[in-house]
Amino acid sequence: MDTSLKAIEATGIIDSQKRLILDHPLPVAGPAKVRIIILLPEKNEPSEQEWYQAADFNQAFDFLREPEEDIYSPNDGRPFNDKG
Image (cartoon, rainbow, N blue to C red; front, side, top):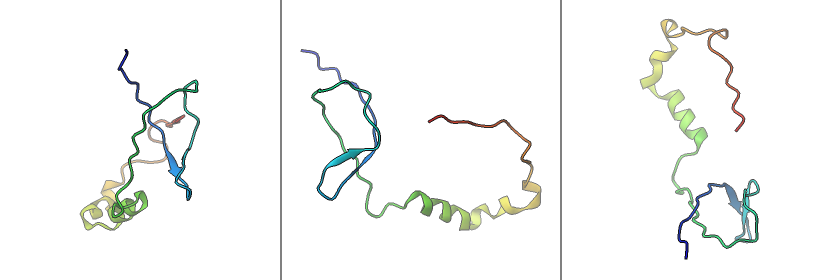
């Protein structure tokens, strides 16, 4: 009996009827038996937006607003096109 497992990370939601709905189809031909591990965020964990706001208003980063720190222009670097 082969006990090796392949991990696939996926995201989704649990609806009001306690069903798991994935954001995208899985890259697996079914039907197939699977094991599921569900990771739930902590209730008191800040959202991504809250992290951004905390960093934006944190005085530790005030030095980044100084003119001498503004060393880049829109013409610097190369475009980053992340296809996901």
